[in-house]
Length: 142
Image (cartoon, rainbow, N blue to C red):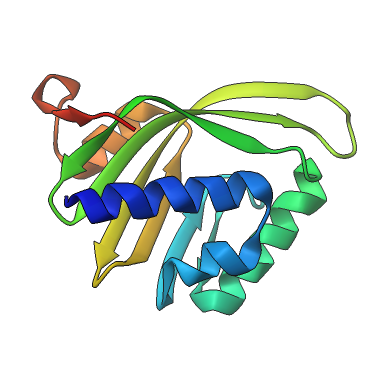
């Protein structure tokens, strides 16, 4: 992973936390595939820039505008992929329940743009999908 991808991911997370969908989209390839763990009971897949807009609306319908992510200590370089462990903070829009939960996300990059995003509620699931153990990881500071 280049320093450029780390910086792009930092900006993407800033845009996510600010709820700036146009800035989120600016970092994504038009063919992006986003696998969310939050939409519907079993998660949902969103495709393309229009899919990102639907994802944003779905998140706001469930969480309001207060949802944000806070990266843990580091990002992990896996070549064309970036693995991030972070904590999600939010309050259910309808329930008012405060939520703080660990989440893992895998991003894939091509030509300076995000082409793939998959969220996991358990870091072990992300590691299994990637075929790596946590001991093998070489973190890069966020």
